[in-house]
Image (cartoon, rainbow, N blue to C red; front, side):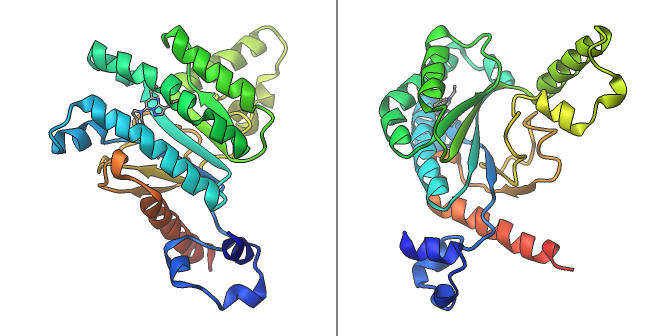
Length: 260
Ligand SMILES: CCc1cc(N2CCCCCC2)n2ncc(-c3ccc(F)cc3)c2n1
């Protein structure tokens, strides 16, 4: 989108021309580099429509495609999506089985287009407990997109932040105990490098849908300085319009707090 890129690249000639459409899309140089989303409300979305919960999850998967395209379109660099928490194992067996088939289904439908759009797929979480077909689909997508340099689409699956920090602490303690590491050399950068998010910038913006106002053990270390934006919209109904509303609010806050 030429006019959007011109605006983003600060083309002065176009500065004054902001079409009606531009009012809906966040613009300019302050697009959040990393957006993280807790995709909540799929079950309630279905219930409100008299549909089974798995219909909510299935429509939630379509929202993943919509929001990924919208984020890529406006220049977000990293999109982290919380798809399955360690607590989700407590759900009914049939529901977990359905959820565990979604990565494979999503990738069989979308991986070709993701590759065409230079998207790099990453996974953040513990492979243990995940069914082999889920891991296989994920690892194929990661392998086939590892050299892509566009949007990083980072799926948090079977991810728990406290467990992630305990694992990082264990690794550092092992290195110190074996004499490889001087404990005094441990700093925030070294600790961050032991987390599953290693190599990614911290999220600039966290979005949580369906009115829940909790972190639910998600990226507790990485979200230390992030803007939080909450919406009552259920995830399956979350699309480009809601993403842009969140980013415009992020830009408004950045202008206010950025200033003196
Ligand atoms: C493993 C649970 C799960 C649930 C889920 N839902 C259900 C609940 C959350 C809302 C979104 C739809 N999605 N949607 C895409 C994926 C996906 C994961 C990895 C990947 F590489 C490609 C796609 C996904 N995974």
